[in-house]
Structure formats: structure tokens, C-alpha cells
Amino acid sequence: MTAPSQDIRREKIKTFIWWAMWQKDVPGFFKACDRSQKVNKSTGKRHRNMIKIQEPSRPLKIVHMDWVTGLPPGGDASYNSCIEEEYRSSQPPECHH
Image (cartoon, rainbow, N blue to C red; front, side):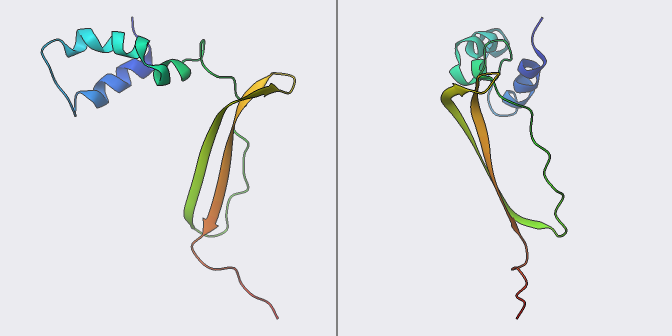
């Protein structure tokens, strides 16, 4: 049995590449892939749940996110990663005189 994420990745892979034994080779690739292992809950990095932000009053033009990993463990749960977010609205801020 495969993890659901592997099945999803297989579906995405088959739209880009193909070779005779690809379905047999792909599970070994996921086991050897550092990035795939980091997203695995049992072997991956520890992180908190996302924090809910206030819903914007107008559409956002730019949303920028950076996932920072490899930090020294901190806090009660020894978190070692964080996400940094920046939001910009589609209109300039209003100026009041």
C-alpha cells in the first residue's frame, strides 16, 4: 500500500514523463528523495499548525510566503521551522490629511 501523497504525485508525474517501468521505479525514488522524506509526518520536520489571519477587506494583489526550515528547536514542542508571510492589497493605502 502507498501513502496518499505518493499516489497524488504519481498522477502528476505521469502527465510529464513516461518509461516502461516507471510505476515500479517511482516508489524507490520517493524513498530516496530528501524532499519527499521531509514532508512525511513520521520522518519530517516538526512544525505548528497554521495561524488564522484576519480576512482582508479587499482583494490581495501579492501574497508572498517563505517556508524556513532547519532552525534550532525551540518552544515546548521543539519546533524547528516557520513560515513567513507578506500580503499586499490590490490598491494603495488610503491617505488621510
